[in-house]
Length: 348
Picture (cartoon, one colour):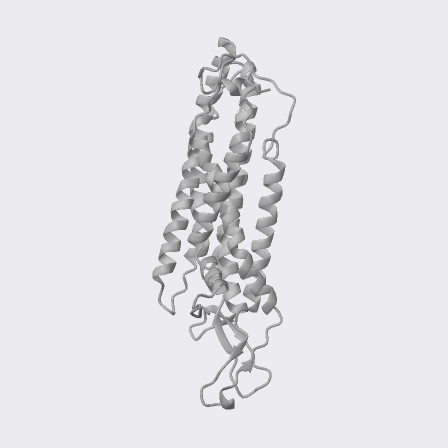
């Protein structure tokens, strides 16, 4: 008869510890992105591109390439900031420090990148056209914005806003007047003071709301400037529309990813409070624990479990946004490489 030594490894504990690390979300995002790229079919059908069409494509590409690069660099900057923040979280912080900047950081980095994008559009991309180009379409920020992107960004925006206001109203001040505590009462022992745990209160929420408002203004400015600028000349309208949709789509990805990252960070902190269910006072009650009551405890715990999923989704958006740094590649009917911007000119 063989005897097996008792295992000391708790799979559930290991999984919980892994999900608590933001770097795990980054690893999952890389796997998901590679899987999507590997299993997404790529069409080989390319129209024959005339020299005139290639010239049109080059004009549109030259005008919008700096903007695509700005979006790609912004995505990389956000990924670097995320990794730096995750490493900093592992190192730790002082017990009394209110690290509100951790929750504003993705909003701030994306806002700076979009400000650069807006400057590129206004200072470089709105130069006078070479020939009058009259279009009957009234263009606004909504014209080239992807509908799914607007819906996703709006959902993330409202969710973060509701989370921030709700958590702020539930928070309590510490001895220095900072709203960073959540007071959890002990109903079966009124003589015991409420448990005070670190929480996503107004000390975090107010900076996040300011960053959220600033990001919204910058995003709408980019979308509007991208839409209303004049076309280069009549024959480039089709190619420019494709390029402008790409810029607007990248802008919405950056905005959505930053909001979702801030939301995931908030849900992680809220989830920590939801995991508190009892209190043991040494030498009192015979060592038995006191129950801790919070009517939103289950919701908070669920938010904590959902936070890694949100992080992974946001990081996938950023990883796909970095592809804007790549030049387009087209193939002629014989399969040889042609001008990398030619495909854009052929799309109508």
